[in-house]
Length: 202
Image (tube, rainbow, N blue to C red; front, side, top):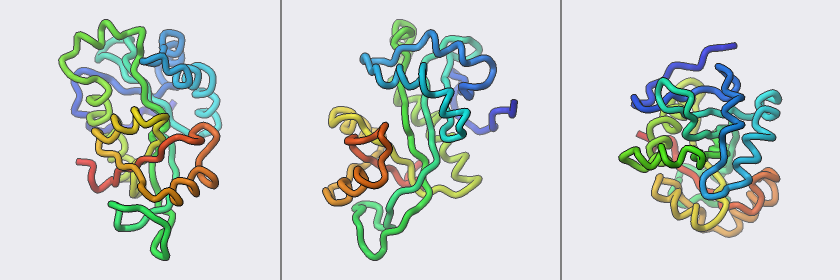
């Protein structure tokens, strides 16, 4: 098995590993997504390994450093989105083109480990996003060139939360309709598209 790529996570509290490495498949049995997010739990337990074998995504588990305590998992996927250089207001125009991106398909905390999570003196999801997910995204971007990180929020409440992570929503309804009709997978149908330019990731 290939070694996990070395990149700086700025985290002494957590280890980040591929789901398919180091026997991490056993983590699946002890994971229920926070806030009763059954879709995220189902994906990890029933679909994640299939997608790995098809080479369509990469799934990662986040553990407390030096332990097998799984705190979270997240999923990244290579993709492309219609994009313009005026990233503050994406819309379809003569300047719109497909650019390479990375989709944050899933990110979830482990509800089973909530008592342990509550002992940590910071917002764990936010910490993992900034110190692990974004660092991995920057590592990939430095190797192959990536323009944007994007996701599909399940609902407006989550979309508002992801705004605090620096993601933006699209105000142009025609852009959103076209994404939903022509580009979004069945997994993200009718979700809210959001994006964050790589240039804005520190």
